[in-house]
Length: 306
Image (cartoon, rainbow, N blue to C red; front, side, top):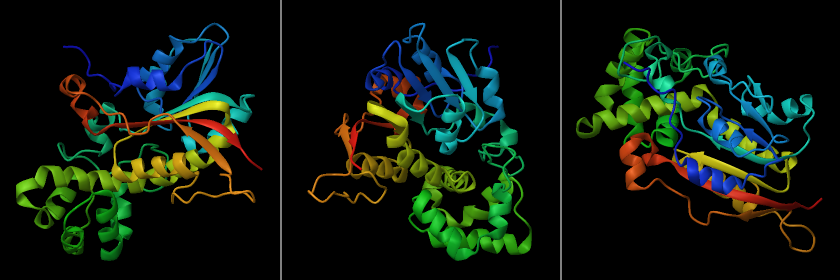
């Protein structure tokens, strides 16, 4: 039996088209993972091209290609600008970030990302990070959990789910995936329990790894990293992620407020390439069901006004 795929990139042809890869360009894969996007980018680069890939998970290093044009950086992409400077790069032609979780993380039961198997409730992408999901649950009160489940789990009754977790925690610590599933189950809709359970685990993963903060940092730094005419291509899998990307491309900030100079012109100018997000067609969803929730947005940096 063959080994399961580390990850199957969603919307790969569309991603490459949006990047508009120049053979001699410098590109960043902010979320290396299984390396599918990186290998496809290298396939379009010439001898003078360069690709720098980031991933905070030590497991990803094993997927790094042996290619002189390729540099792997084990770090969260929120620190991209500093690491690029360390490697002698000031500006790049394109940045790609696929914010989806690799198959590998769900399939490796010991990482605690899924309720399909019992495991320590970890969920850290970087296993050297200080806080696990179990520790976060121990610290959060009912108000914190309600906010978390409302914002990142999209539950119809987040308060009910939060109260169920707190009630279970008062009896015994929640330290494993099965313990969390048992704890939150009374607070979920029985008719949609499996979906809501997945959303609860998703919300915890987002919080543990500070994913929205990292995305906001990346988009804030992108105009300082990209060359004029350089492109940012982002694949999101959650409505909050998508809204942040949409707002940044439209206005240059997460709130969507367009900041203008003295003459009334936008300070940070993006030329939006995807007026509507690109999504997977029926054939791709059939072959890769996890691509169903993927949304691709792309924009070109037209200029920065000081």
